[in-house]
Length: 48
Image (cartoon, rainbow, N blue to C red; front, side):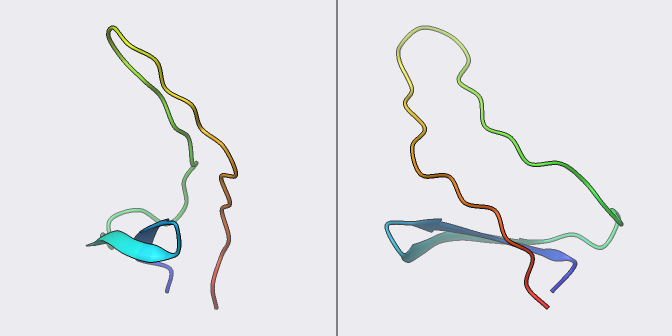
């Protein structure tokens, strides 16, 4: 679905968001502030 973002963590749904206000976009991840973040095996796919 073009208006939905599903977030999965280890194969389990962690969040789902619907937003019809954007027709396209970009994907990224970031960490702000103190600490450490490791992003590994990030997959982005478009579903029909």
